[in-house]
Length: 134
Ligand code: CO
Image 1 (cartoon, rainbow, N blue to C red):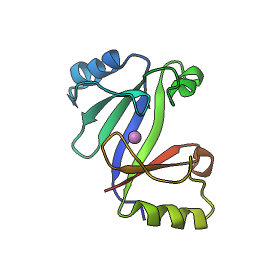
Image 2: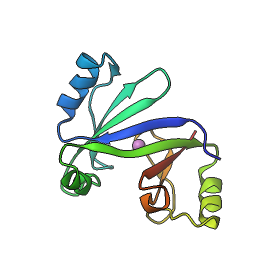
Image 3: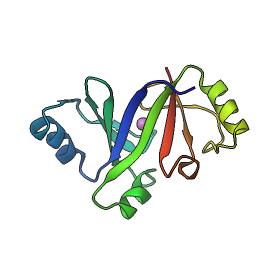
């Protein structure tokens, strides 16, 4: 069902510092920081030859990554994102197999402008999984 790894997301406290680490120390191609008020995060995308890294910094009062950073003060891997052909079909089949879909189960438009859903980390070896329709 799942296809390519679209990105690995890393939550950070200081996105400027993290971006410069990837650009200046690791020599990667790094985007500018984009505030995404609808999602409560500022994002930077790092383009690697085979996938992307998404840096996330909390934005605003109720950022969805605030609690994660309280538990992981140095930052850390927040989620992995896999591509699927048909997000509603993927959701229905995952639910049938007992996986929990977060929220109301309706795909939302994610940081890339494509429909996304999140799956409960407890059902996937402790890792939050994002599905993105290709
Ligand atoms: Co993501």
